[in-house]
Image (tube, rainbow, N blue to C red):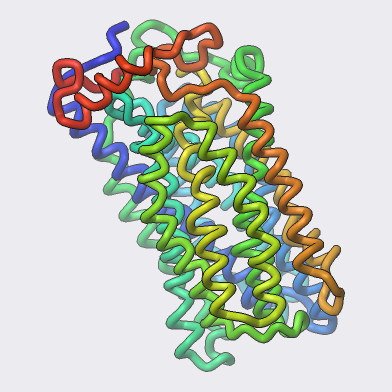
Length: 470
């Protein structure tokens, strides 16, 4: 199979695939993270009994974790769909499920109105959200990877995660004016619902964007050669069980966004903890951190094309784990400027060594025929294992306890060490040709030849103007 395919149409599809991955991920993760924000800021008061505020905080953060519990189920179903029906089709399914379930949260009754049915319905909608988001990153990453120009897979695939960070910025930015300018009673009564109802735009905008992208040449070629699997799930485990395990362990890095955007928000703003950060002020911390991340991600993705996937993941894992101590300590002493600085360092800069690279690294470990399935299952099992962390953190470091930064920081650092060790044990993939991905015996391209072809591609020449063909 020829690795290089010239043509303006191919270049156009590379750009459209990257744009679709960016915008689709931004829209879907806007939905996912407005729930995370609301679960920390308002859900404890609205959807759970008010007689015990400590229990309400734990219960609310547990509903956030329910979305992660649903991810492995969604990964099995949507991964299968992506490898049997195509990358484009699975992304459209994800988008519609996410959009409708998020809109539904915006019209749910509260505990005061319907009692125990309020948290039950909230959990059901969160489960649907988790199911839907399970196929987004693996589908978008695979689609971009298989459309990407030669030697630029890390750079192009990083736009998937840049979109995720942009979605988080948008989620917090929508809450900011509402929390800042609305009276507290109005915000708690109906203002929090506005961001959820705006998800109607997700369905419309996402469909318009994603319908313009063609199915990847890799998937089309698998179909032409009769290589589309009938049962990609057992094939994935048979071909790549050990790499799937490595991805599970690397995906435990979700502990860092959990510390930064979920537990950190509850720790800083919930009255029971006594820190006293204003809700509208605290929301600026993830906004600023994510703005930095949006700028850093493509740069790190490009570095991974030059120097490999493993080094930035290992450095990002260990570095952000260490910074978790300092970030939580800054919140504990009530220092908003220091919390801002450390959130930028931990979340916006150092963590992106992992975050920017895994959208290319994970799918590169697997064969085309099982790529979406293998990545979706292993990544979402890893993130599901972190689902209990917000509630666990609130339990082991409840309001009134001492040493919260050290307790939670130590936990987070140990988890990041596990992720770094898994990355260290994984083979490098950046200089493999696309049709060699997933082949354990594949020989990486000579570095000098790789750099020559990659440099030519960046200059618009390629190897005769070529682009990677799956």
